[in-house]
Figure 1 (cartoon, each protein chain N blue to C red):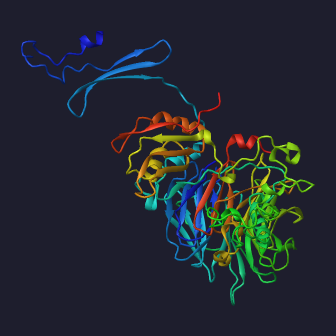
Figure 2: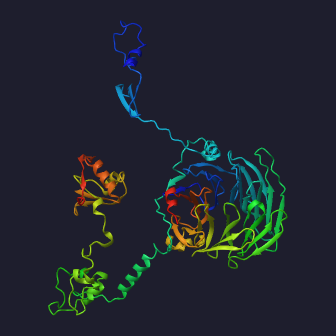
Figure 3: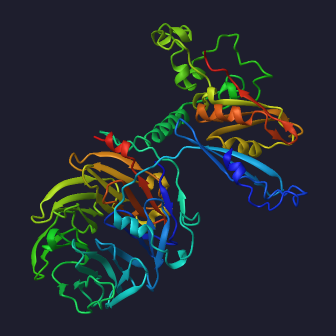
Length: 294
Length: 328
């Protein structure tokens, strides 16, 4: 506090000081050294609105030593030339951008087709499906029974007569392939392939996503758009999906949405930060769509 | 890793080069401009303007004082790297396809293109090691390549003993760098498949050639013996060797520019391919370009590499230290 006393040299006579002058009343910044090696700086200043503000900063000074080739260091200090002349240091966004993150792991036995192989396989599958004769059991059209437009209104043709189900089963792809046992009888899913897949097949296929990284957002304004939500949530990590429930007739939001992140850690961060965020004069409520397993 | 994309050019890149310390990167393209970049953050240092035609080639001397460029305006030019001042201009009857400094930076070679009535020529100049000095107009050596087909690439071997040239028909020739005599000629690549690139190992005792015959070969400088062969599935435009301790070879190529519109990005094979230098095995690829890669260059410190594509982008990828430790 000694500094405080010393720092009132502006006054000549206490009698002249009838109005407290803010400028002279500001003490010099106080620097205290803490035991743990940090410094605390207390500054009092007047901000833009003319208010007196006290700011306390705690800082730690570390010395980072870096070795650099003197030639490189010299070149770094060169004044820029040509169209870049006079521009401040650092990359300019018009010429330099960051690309997408690339994971590059060199490995023995790299097969050039690793990424590409999947595509021809899919093509094959589609081709075999094309070749296969598809016949609807309800209307005898060339589509699967499940896709039939008359599915709800008509019963399958001659189902009572016990029409063979194998046609549909075969066309159903790999899931239906094992449904018929050796004796032609039905084998339940858990008994197939020696009951290896105990969990059973999961639905959704490739659309399956990490539910643990999905947030449920409620109290969303009815005029919200998916892009608005995406904008808010993208600040906290890579968003893979935004789903905003909308009323089919009015096209307005129903008031809740789901946001999926690629990383669970990002989702957790976003959950914490966006919960309580004001959006469209409503306060968003954000929680995990599914609680993590204990 | 996140690659840095450099968008300083409006047309296809033709060559990229790192300075000896790897801190600066020079790129030339068909849009007449030479760009210099800081490799640490991708910041553009500046451009060198003056050429009136497409640029084919660039090289920087070991002290990063001089920059040599050559292009389709039939000139080879020497620039001061620091100020961008043009120091010297040499004129020829045809365009310059390749420039390269010798290992010590005291000599500069330029290869002119063979065109109707003109043969390929190799000119060698002594470079005065002073920015203020007047550079000579007379070549210290001049090789007229009349017996061999068109020269596409050339360079100085270790200690400037030899000049090695790559030719349009897939052959590689060795010349005495003092007298200009042809010592030997070999045919490492398929007949009629042009050698598209020639890059040196760190000590210049061996080099790698890339060719349109879809292979790259590691060749000994003194014997011209093929040491290793890397087989790719696309015509190659460029090949680079990573310095020790990494033993990689990076190849770049892709469908020819004229066929690009008829192929998808996946089929175009516009990827940088990594091969193990010794086992000749492909170990990975890096995607990103949407045009063929015209040139790949590796920083002399081995920490990053850079590729210039027909799409006008320069991408360079920083290989993290940690990743490097995990390698084979």
